[in-house]
Image 1 (cartoon, rainbow, N blue to C red):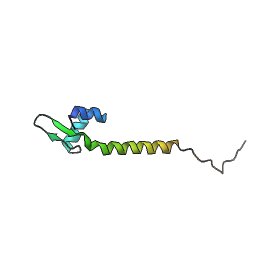
Image 2 (tube, helix red, strand yellow; image 1 turned 60 degrees about the vertical axis):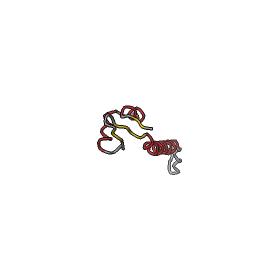
Image 3 (tube, one colour; image 1 turned 120 degrees about the vertical axis):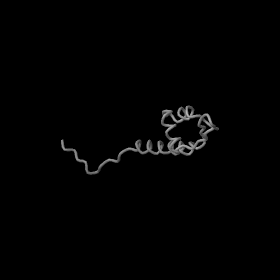
Length: 76
């Protein structure tokens, strides 16, 4: 499925100008049909899956309880 720059910006939740810049720099692959750039949506699936995995891993790490320090002494 191909998306326009506007649809891609909405799909990725970033600004249209950034998407266009990435397309012109070659960081996002696209096809120019003479009128507009068309971007294959599937090229983002791996990236989005990796980002979801990273978020889960980070959340698991942040939710891990801190171990008690055996050297802590009550000074009261």
